[in-house]
Length: 516
Ligand code: FS2
Ligand code: SF4
Image 1 (cartoon, protein in one colour):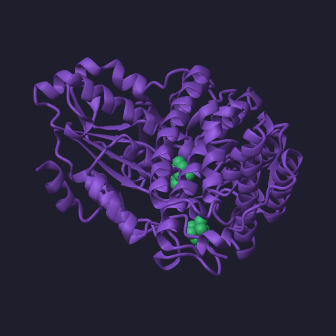
Image 2: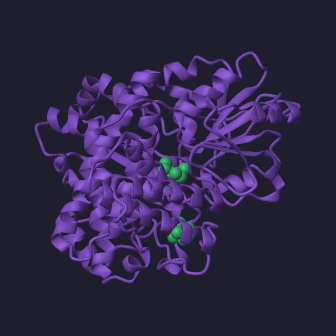
């Protein structure tokens, strides 16, 4: 096997025996076969034409290969067969691609093709969520075939690949906009919402991952059942959507970021429903309580299929019964509640207030501190960075990296909390909208704003978001906890020369640099 798609890759170079994430060599090989089959399908589509079925299939297949999504060889094999069948129906002569060719390629070509591949895996995840809500963008869907076909082409040159890298970012912006539209038209515009970390006594279900549609269905199915629902990980921002928060059994948030799940789920008297990444290898201590749905699969765990009948989860919650007494829990800094719901709708709704505060000097700087969390100790950087930001600065955040600091009370400026959670990783779209609006108000370029981006990455959705920021010409991004293994020195040079992207160092040094 070879895999270097995530931040925790072995030795910082690549997993070759077994994944640090727990992925076996056999799963890695099947995932490669799945991507190779998708390239075959893309080749067939380019000769013939795409269908609704091929569009859906490509998105689901790419999402399946994202880190911490699917550890189940049988389901991946099944998907490979489905993709191949579609390909043969369109063009029996189109060949699948052997991913070993990519892993063994010249390091710069491999680097650029990998950036495109990982980027479209992220885009596919967002496009899949949007499609579930009935939203599609033909430009986004067409790009998967174009990008996959390019990855499978031996003769493609560096310049052409660099253009495609940036196009991946542009397409992802369109895709995040599509998902934003899908989410807000379906569930309403997020409103600032305080979320408790206390778990009430009695039966409950923990729902994790990014899929709001699964949460909605679970809320419908648990109406009047005496079962409470708690979000976990990337599901936290769901509390802010009017059409979800109206369910009285949606009570609060359980636990912190994904990498703590094995510890946090060990003795929880409730089932856990995984709707997307990040699932970690399931420990015996809670294996009887794990349920998966949609793209997530894990060997021997109960999978809820297309019928979305959550009865087994509900029955498990009732059988386990939850805690006997209310259980007060805290975030990693001891806070008992967190806030969410500061999407672009809310922040731009008070744009005048924000602009006045900047003009009056009450707000001197904005920081976007967001992205993925992960297990590395160096990620404490983000907690310390936020703690050390000056009192006249605002911290915009998103995705699961916020669990490092979202329970801190850093006070307010002009009635606005200093930490504003904009949502899930895909809600980077909100941060971009706010940056564009501020640049418009101050008649300057985004790079001239008193705005610094300090990002953390782990998996492939972070890759597509980074590419979006680069495609918008955003410079001086600080990235941590370490730079991706798949960026070759030459490609890194291009990114540094054109975008001045750099690694995080220490909170003190970085703050001094960003505020100078
Ligand atoms: Fe965090 Fe994991 Fe959102 Fe990522 S919960 S690293 O999936 O996409 O973020
Ligand atoms: Fe290794 Fe990350 Fe790939 Fe898992 S996803 S095999 S940890 S590089």
